[in-house]
Length: 124
Image (tube, rainbow, N blue to C red; front, side):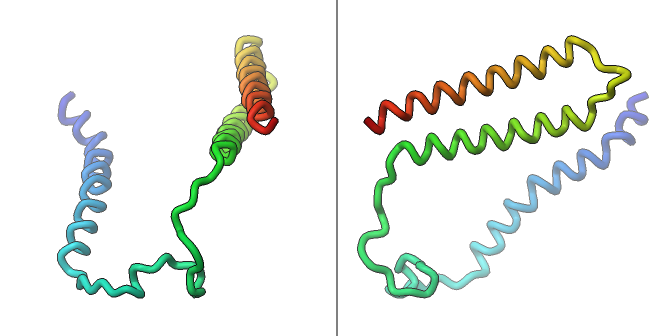
């Protein structure tokens, strides 16, 4: 039984080991192989080949981050709803599954309303 389990999970274990060692090995290899030759030109902020103007360190308003988080939440929700719709089978549809997705959409709607209402306060 143990050998059967080992045989089944050996590819997964090898993939996990490779997935962990590859980035570390790549990082170490590039660290030791590359040349370190800093110049003032290399230390400039890259702006599409143009000469930079002004300071590169500027602060963004918090609202941009909130909108970005809301965008990511909607992306995750869209993927979740798409997968649910693709696996939805009318012959095996249960009321529990439908209630779960309605609850999910309601929570998403409430959270989005809360975030947008909170943002309105920041603009006033």
